[in-house]
Image (tube, rainbow, N blue to C red; front, side, top):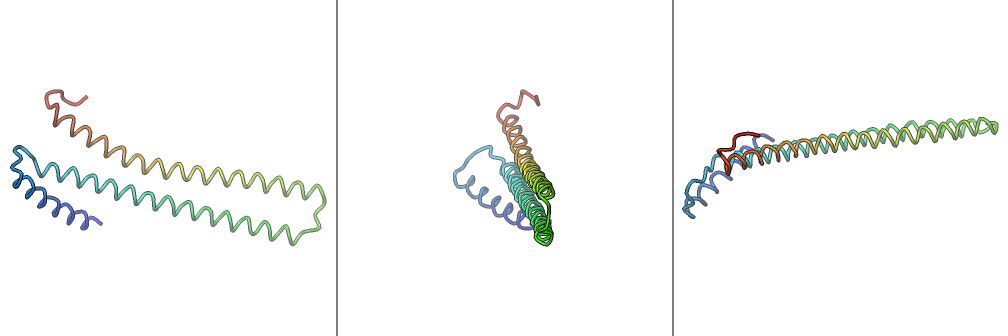
Amino acid sequence: MTQDIEAVTKAMKEQFAKLTENLKVPGVNVDALIESQRKNIEAMSKAAQLTAEGAAAISHRQLEILRVTSEQVRTAIRDMKLSGEQQSEFARKAFETAIANARDLAELTVKSNTEVFNVVKQRMTEDFERMRTAFLPGEGKK
């Protein structure tokens, strides 16, 4: 993936150099502009990777839940001669398990989304800081 980013970066640099030359725009630092865009592409690639990993973790957990639930149902069907009290206990445990599983999936989703958000937020913070110092060079870092 890094080779792809480097190839895109090189192509962008050549296009921006031609553009600024044709438009005769003074004082444009093409290298800094390209570097900023390269970092944006890297951040989006990282966010996409984290999204895929999060989706895979959630899918894996859902499959595990399905396997365990199927086993519980199979056991319940096999042992159909449960008393009323045993049936109530089985139903209570099934409900508690369903709630716990839903909580696990929600936590996995939140964790995945938070990781992706943090990658994008970090890149935006860096980019805004770069723009602030470019447009307000005398203010220093706050």
